[in-house]
Figure 1: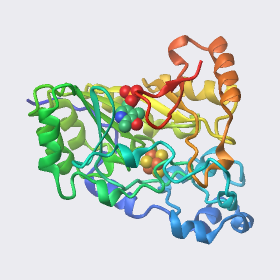
Figure 2 (figure 1 turned 30 degrees about the horizontal axis):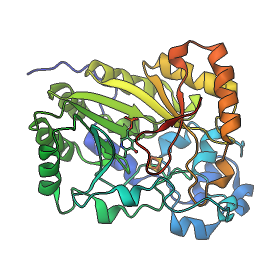
Figure 3 (figure 1 turned 90 degrees about the vertical axis):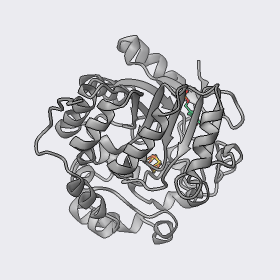
Length: 338
Ligand SMILES: *Cc1c(COP(=O)(O)O)cnc(C)c1O
Ligand code: SF4
């Protein structure tokens, strides 16, 4: 089938995104020099970088404000000394992922939906990430037991959706993703493939013409849940690739994390929802921070989160208000906060 894929210019190719990914900034000195913030080097802890490296693509850095150490994008990636705080309740695996992984590498907590962690690689390292301590290597179904994983999905007739999560599944090559999509499309009861990815936001070059035609050509319904936390993350380049994904037939949703110093105000949340809608993306979830060790400085209380959403609801259309949710290990779904 010759699907027409209008492309944003310049045409994104495998080479351009893989080069950009390889050139991601990992040295805090380089990052802070570019932002005229070299004085902030003292607020960074080299030991933290050894545990969970700094990693941020140049295109994302380009959207940070120079000279502003409180920039909401910078804050998401900067390994601050604050991460050392040992706070009760903030632990390595706050959402019980380790106990939910089955032997075939499937992470199934909820009915009808199976989540596959197919890669540990991310283009960006978000300091608040609840999977920052996840031992990806052990549970990657592509690594050693893809046939077993597929057989498990085949045999479980209660499933209708497979979610590729991460790490970032779009850090896999187009070829690898094509193979996964072909295998999943062969399972009759799987109707929907959902991709949880931050790449359209942090490395828009990743959305190649090849990927777009693969997404357009599968029989599976494709839902792409992007991850943006602040309106400044969505610029013309991101809007262009999101438009391409829509044209390829994908449903686009966004999930965010409520983060102190990033989006913890009604105006920041409103601007984010408006920027998303402007890019044809609907807000889906606003997650309360999972209490992962090292992320306490991002914490916003449940009561404050609820207040922000109540106020947001008065200011914008109901469909632009994300569902505020909290994940509790062992529960049958994300828990809405009313
Ligand atoms: C969040 C999550 C899902 C998806 O839940 P939805 O409410 O359908 O978005 C599925 N599986 C796991 C393990 C999850 O953590
Ligand atoms: S992109 Fe997602 S999985 Fe990767 S570090 Fe950020 S929040 Fe975590």
